[in-house]
Length: 148
Image (cartoon, rainbow, N blue to C red; front, side, top):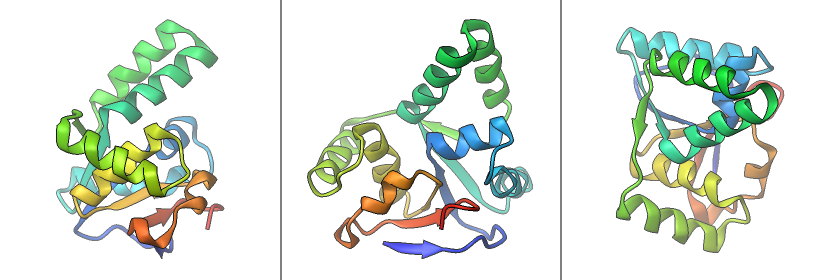
């Protein structure tokens, strides 16, 4: 696993996990990094992705904490962001399942990790659970501020 410090976004591929998107939406630590990535994506300087499973996590958490109408508002807001929402197919599902065998992280997190492998992208997260990921999983992680 390669750790990438808080660098400014360069041309490349990035996968956001639910932690990263929630930090941006909530203005929490790390939100500035995500904002810079969103600006770079809007300018065509990088590509951002999120797996639909991780998007579902975001919406579930918002609905649990703030109610259905706020979750719907959040989804509308996300739809306006320059993030490609990637559906789950057999390839992604099997890659996530394979990662789960070697990585002691939540199954939903395995989808973000697998998507980053498939896209050869950096995984943007601040989720401390990813600290448990073994080097054999070959993930490049860009840690959000205060999570390095």
